[in-house]
Image (tube, rainbow, N blue to C red; front, top):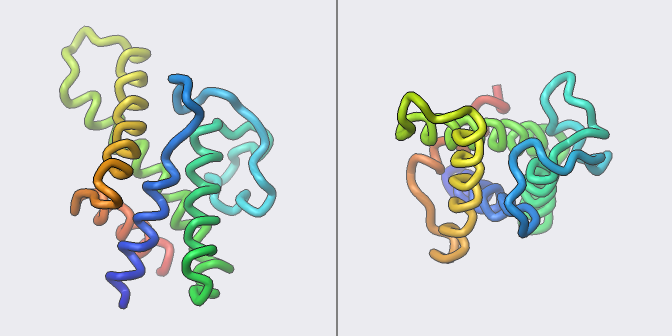
Length: 151
C-alpha cells in the first residue's frame, strides 16, 4: 500500500511540472501563491514572489493528490505540502545537476540554467507521452521526500 501511495503521489507530482507555454525559467513570472500552498514553500521564501513553474508544480501536486486520494487525510493536513515542496526542490536540483554533468567547462551559468529548465519541462512531456510512466530514479526522488517528511 505504501508503494502504491508513493507511485500515485509521484504521478501527480510529475504531472504538475508544466508551466506556461513560453520558455521562461525557474525564476520567471514571479507572483503570489495560493494561500493554501504556502506550507510547501522553503522557509523564508516570500509567498508573494513565487516563480510560475513552482506555483504550477505545487498546485498540481497538492490539488491532484487531494482530489484523487481523499482518504489520505493525514498527508493532506500535514505531510503533503512538505512532500510536494521537497519534490519540487529535489527535481530542480536533479535537472540542474544533470545539465551541469554534460556541459563543457565554458558553459555559462545562464546556459546551464536554461538547459536545466528544458530538462524539467521534458520530464513532464515524457511523462505525458508515456501515459504516466517514469523512471525508478524519479520514483526514488519522490519517495525520499515522503520518507523525509514522515520522520
